[in-house]
Length: 92
Image (tube, rainbow, N blue to C red; front, side, top):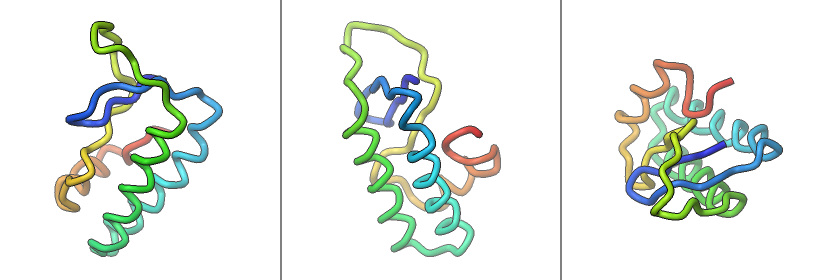
């Protein structure tokens, strides 16, 4: 799956990692629902770090459609709340 982190670029993440990423997505969703900025920030940073860890960078000169777009680490909880209206950051 090609994942774009806003402001950083794309990473190719193997399907075997998606379930673990979904758990981190659930933590973000819970923090957003609770309006807990501290928990939100920690969960978002954890998700982005994990994507960077397991993903292989897509070369900048390669254009691939992103199946998943994640907000930047400095995204505000209100911005991400809007994304959850569509079912979360990670589909499924």
